[in-house]
Image (cartoon, rainbow, N blue to C red; front, side, top):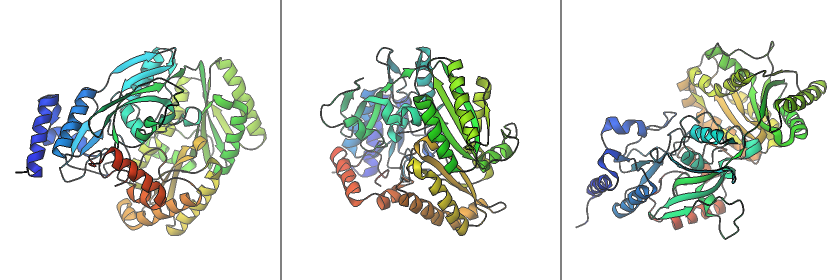
Length: 478
């Protein structure tokens, strides 16, 4: 007689206790609650258990048991995702596999400029280990104190250094993966050239755990810069910021490692909710750029280059005003302004978020046209536009008009404003998800904006690698 689904789940949970230890199988509501709600509190699910394996072999054992008992698995790292990719559904039939205990740095090779880390290592810890070895791990984002390398790889995270160093995909040389069948693929090769067939690594990066679970990775390191120079520049428009970006790239080349765009309203919102963070200029300016140079020669060399570049920008009228950080504390204060924008938005109330990217040359036109369309739809809507101008990625968010109830605003306008933004992105040959992933939040957009051929290829890959559909079901392809 075949077990009922509930009996199969109970048998699965019992088998997991034997495989990874009872202390690492959580089923009590107080224990599982922190794992069931996403960072934005947009999704809350249920799970038959939260499993905390401590080794790759234990992850593989869990997956084999899941195959035997037909239990879907949801991988989770630091639970800092913004698209619901690490949250189970509400049925209670899925098990969460927390990879937080896979937290070892396995190797650091300074001559090969690589570090091999397990999936549960926190991003900031990777940065620290690299720095102690005189190296730089350049991936940097707001959640770096809690997000993990496994999650960064699963969503192909971007961050502030993409302009110079690329997304997480570009920082990864090799992977260790537990397949949907519970086998272990050891692809931990620190090679920069390996032309031997299909690139399996790139299948799993950005797949959000829907094809298999990343358990370790070989990541690239870079020389630790001798100096960094940070500045804020005031400009008249996003289009002017693009012209300034072209000038900065021409003068600084690969030394330009950060180029962040922030609208005036972004910084006014930060000042409103965090009064200790003052507006950096004496008068208001439409757009602010936070830019940074990283120099391997010396601080004097970096500052001389920076001053020449800023002098040209000011003389040509591209930049209206500028302030250069005089020390590390002031540099950190500049970055804190940027990083506090999402926190200020949260303090202001619920808002409609978009993580989009368009070709860099189209950013100005996109902002101008989409702002106008939103203003026609909702007069008084406040635009919180900021992001990584150097790679065309904007966080294009819409706050309710002053004095309007935020919940009512979302209920009435969210669907239509999403359509306006995504249709504009599509017209500008962009993407509806630049660095946060698809998760469960953007499954309808993927089905709508990807071509049938592209979706068909993705479904073929999913069916081939995960025929039982147990790997993070309901995410990416739905």
